[in-house]
Image (cartoon, rainbow, N blue to C red; front, side, top):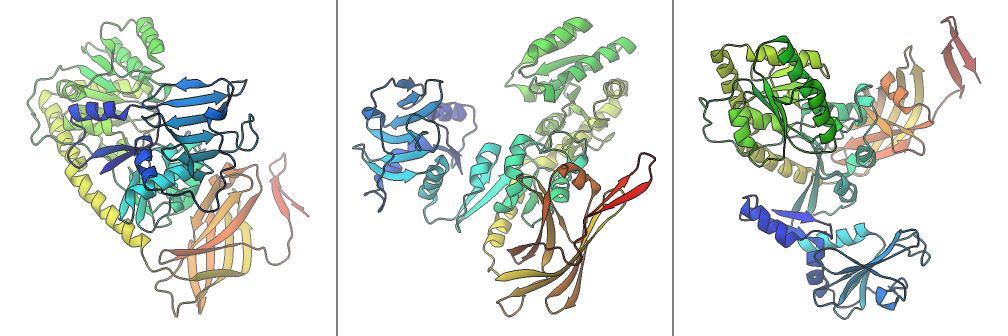
Length: 566
């Protein structure tokens, strides 16, 4: 397995050395970097691309203005506009020859706009032109894989934007969703997407597979976009000790929290809960919070304000978290959201009982409350304190039963178990990608709609599906998409009813939840019908048949129903 990186400012020789010393790089695992590989990649490019005149090629050696040297593992020089906007970066080999000239003012010299990246030979002469960094990235990936089969597992939301555009017959691209895709859960599955999800999630169909860490998150995404057949659920994994020490002595009232000290992790809730337990009982409870972040000073101020400094401590980063879990009695998770929360598995594997808010999406997928841990009402500090107090008041033998059950549950997330499931997913994604394509077309012969009380929208469609092949290998699946104009945002539902009415003819019913129409307001939306069969799909805009009467139903100030016709 190769770990691929694209940044140009880190020293990867040092990173590899550190990872090897810490045991994270094993035989067969390597870290590859685009900028380290570019000189080797260029050696295979003998002549410039035919037809390219490289009109944008203007290396800094021809520039008479000020140039700034940039820090990093290889030589880079840059020029800037008067206002500090970056206009160009030239990259050099170790021998000082020009490797790549990257202009950000390709449309007009000195004015930010347009991109031009030109790869050069060891004499500094242009060989290849790319109109975007993504073009360069794709060229590197093609250089790496050649004609071989390859599987790309993308676990970075920024890289996912680019990798959604990388389509090759020999390459399977799998995107792993590592965090909640929603800003909040005020409107459930139809809530506002996070900024990164807004850029990636409308294009999930482009990936050969999308991997979610929990069934709950997968279900929420499917309610938003429907399941196009490329979804998988695989939790994160960890190495599990062959036999954990169940009789290890623990500090009875000691809790720990492992989290970035940010607003999203809400460590202040844990501090307030510990304060409540101390104030309402004689339990010698204490909390060690491991991690660092922007809220450290604010949290330290809260500790001082509550007077809990003797038993609540901010411990900073630690590389010995496993041993901390092994000596603590319980752990806390108070985040606003998680995709899974591997820290819960870490805690349970050590027999440290997790107490977690019922946040989307992780805790409920891992913890059986009262059996191997506890789930508490979302955001309720009082309930959190009560749960801590109740757990610590349990007899030691009942606590031990919980600890043993937690250790057993953690084994479900072992590397051995999850890696074998990854092999199945990768095989299935490959087979799905290489199914024989079907020449599919879909047309619409009739449409109707109904807006029910409460805002539920129903759409009825008579559709015809055909193929140039003699017969479709399976019954098509049908979807209707509602997309807001000038926006990425859309919702898609699968047909709630699909009735065969003739050869290739179907009567379809689609139902949109009121949460969808609320989420898209105010906007003008368009509708699309999509048919999928054997890995192929066809789409068509949805016409409105019949009398095109526009109506608006509304409630008067007295709550009576009225209608505007136009």
